[in-house]
Image (cartoon, rainbow, N blue to C red; front, top):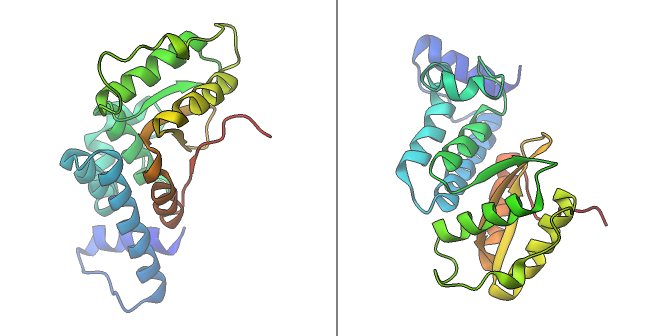
Length: 200
């Protein structure tokens, strides 16, 4: 059990304020703030997303009970270390700010999914001609994602994935200039956002 898990359980059982004088807690508080800031930026200031992530941080047992049906799909029934990261991912997917598919998804679905994400965030004109983004349907998923990533660069759009340590991709599309800061916040929170789909 990590020190942060201990403090969360202590708070749940005794409803006491956490002792901010503890150096380890201060570090965990920084991670918490980074995660909340990341959630806000990825969701375009969607308060529902931020509130869900905060709920998973402060009252993880209540969060698991409230979102039991959603978590069942991931085989999660009780709080665990990465719960808040998963909470952010699921909330983003619910608001259509992220899309998830597995590692062997057809290329046509990859293209369709990315177009949906870009439209949701209005990163390109609605009448955009997508014909230049077409590619062979039988490409491996990772290769198709890498091609799409490179095709989007001239439009200053970054294609990346929120790493949940599984065989699926949780895709996000963001303005290219924001990617470095988003990756920094993810790292500070203890996680990763990656933008390389094919090993070099």
